[in-house]
Image 1 (spheres, helix red, strand yellow):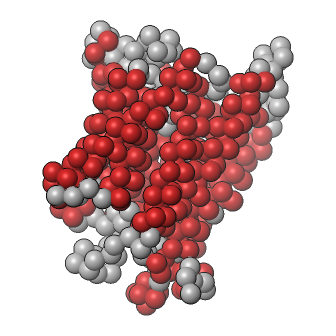
Image 2: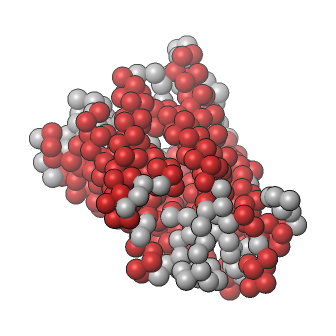
Length: 404
């Protein structure tokens, strides 16, 4: 069978869009950080583009996506991409799907970096990323998307990574912060963003790239891809407005940081549901994600965990909102591979499975990441010295300055 060139082209473009999200995320986080740590934040994100592809192609793809001896993990047959064809007999391109998955693998650990801003050793980060990828991300992928299918076989849905990417990254960020501790002076000392124009630019790049993230997950040009494309835009737009409304009601003024954060919260929320709900479902999920995440980012002050750039409040909570609301708004009329949620006459079964799947990945990611962080802390050390933190990680870790 001949390769569907239009669909292949769309997946290639989508993969490039997802890769572009990594520097977008770096700017989004970097602008929120303090000026003395700008380059360090850029490096924590961009280095994922160097480390992760190696790990993914050597073993990550095989262990996450191929058939294995159990429902818990994939197999070893495709280590080093052994047997992965450019074009298979059925006309599909396994190699292209490897690359598309690779882009998801690149951005997921990068999401965690925002939580540990200003205080994590870069050397520890270089070890953390590949270890976390193999021990947390790969099993989560295998359960939700892979041939192993521990959670997928139960009936849970995740179209583009609300559970595998955002819940896993957000829960892991919380665990890493718990071991790492608070920044010196937080929360008494003000630590405002140093460059909000960078943050707004980063949010725009993320929004642009997210069309590849979500619509590309249809793996071709189809009605589902079109619906996912529209849903991505709709949810982000509504979430931005919802976040600003909460800011106006609670604080008395809407902010540019709130607008940027609201966009990302909506994108996170719609990610698991993008190809399973109609446009009005996307509106509802966007509104819920924007409003709930705007309130959730304030919890760090109440509970005392220093999630520097709101990874937990936006990605973990936003991913949970979208993942659970699939159980309400999913409709098989949009995607025959999905299922009807509660509001489409499907009963509460899907809702229950969504809760189980997201809770399982959240707990697994938190516990394993906590153990990884403890191991690093007891061996090479997880945190920079107090003097290095005071100086700034740009200079202490990289011997550079972002600004003269």
